[in-house]
Length: 116
Length: 114
Image (cartoon, rainbow over all chains, first blue to last red; front, side):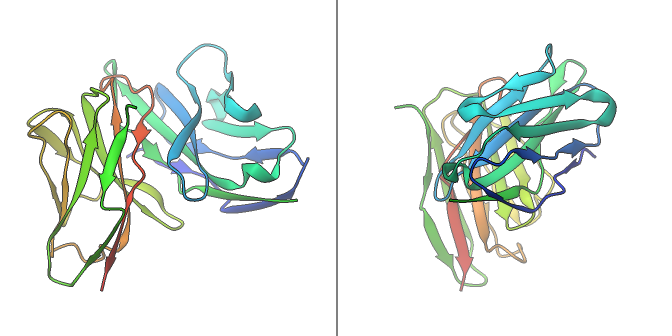
């Protein structure tokens, strides 16, 4: 079965620091990749997604992610974090099999705390 | 505004009772999903439905049941057979079940067994 690993459970940064959150998945075939964010007390929101094409995707609020197929990775980055980026971040993967996408498998999440 | 409505926001259940969590969407999405969120474990899929009157078990379906009699509604029943039901439950929907373009999530129901 598909698995998604987020190795950083809790990351603490100061404002203006750079961010990189790791995400690795286990499926060897074609995948759709997503990063979701959950701000305190709010819904899960889509940050960005990758389906095909340019492996460097840009999302909302200055976030970007790079798909590296050879490493089965989809790491999330932001050059300069803000206090308002404090949230929990989830990586999610959907396998593409026989032209259809399976439902999303989520990682365990990374709690990001940005200190003012 | 289009979206997903989950109710209630908080739910308390006595041991041995069944409870039903509501999920309604007005997005005209075909597919709907139930996830359970526990600290440090991310979201785990309980059940999903890609079309009315059809649903499939996810990774942790034991102790749960669902129905999909209407396109806009996908209620989840947490039965007494679920050994550890205290958790945060999230409902989601998508408009492309065959090719997922991302889900829209509800605001969740926090279930506590007392």
